[in-house]
Amino acid sequence: MHPEQRRIFKSMTPDQKLETALRLYYSAKELKEVALRAQNPEWSEDKIKDQLRQIFLYART
Image (tube, rainbow, N blue to C red; front, top):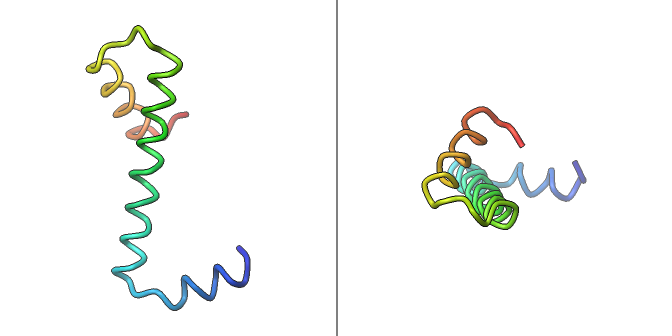
């Protein structure tokens, strides 16, 4: 980790750290959903959501 990043994280409150982690999680989930749609245009909405749930549940790529 870069020293500047370390300094910023140390100065954050626990609530700020949690908010940052949640934003990162939801951003990653949104990006993965977009990628799944692009790679599998024939999949239904339910299939996309199910695959996304499986990926994040089991931490698969």
